[in-house]
Length: 295
Image (cartoon, rainbow, N blue to C red; front, side, top):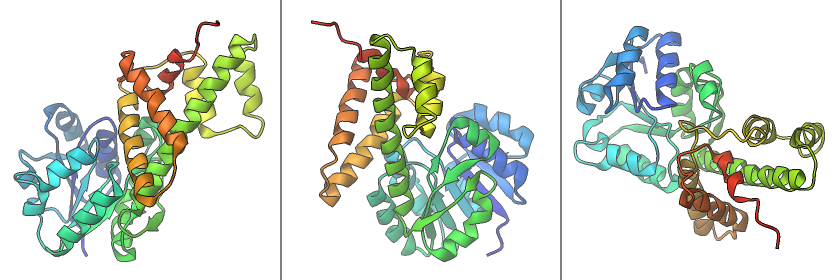
């Protein structure tokens, strides 16, 4: 299929940067849509055409990309009044780059297939900096044919773009990736809290661990950059977002009959952070609740 126009729906913290790379590196006309005007105003300098409505955004598009906060928003934009299920037509392709339940992906794929619309899930991993730099890891679920069609588009935003399996497989891999990140964050937060309470310098702990078998991306980023200096900004991947992604992992585990007790414990710790008022801060903030008075 000759792709002439690509639409990007959802221009939030990650989506705006992704859409900018799509416009700057790609050879397609790029249309953007978001409920907020500010990202569209900024993207205009990069050649992104602002669509006034969802219907206008997809009317002439060959491929439509979505990057939304989660499954509830995906469902609203696709199945809600005036949503994509009623707007898309035969020959178009929809790609969901949000993080959402695999079950929802498979349901949408079946509903869209009945209309002659192709579908793939392609959630992203790595940081906002990676979204800006175009170095995301993008995990695709879909047919080989759809994957080959959309891969050049995704390559403007990411450097690793594996085909993980059929529709929904991209979400499974992304959700498991995030589950491991959250559980590892909990482990290294516990480690530094215990070590410092025992009189060991946290920097020495992390520097030494990074040279041994406990080394990880989470240790070198969440640990050294945030847990060590106790820097927990807002406008980052918040505890609330983590709880949302953990809910998908826990739901999937239950569906598959798996006892995911580490995910359940991590969810409990994250929920306590929300109750302390830290729900909008970066996930390493869970460390704040770990040091208990000695009895």
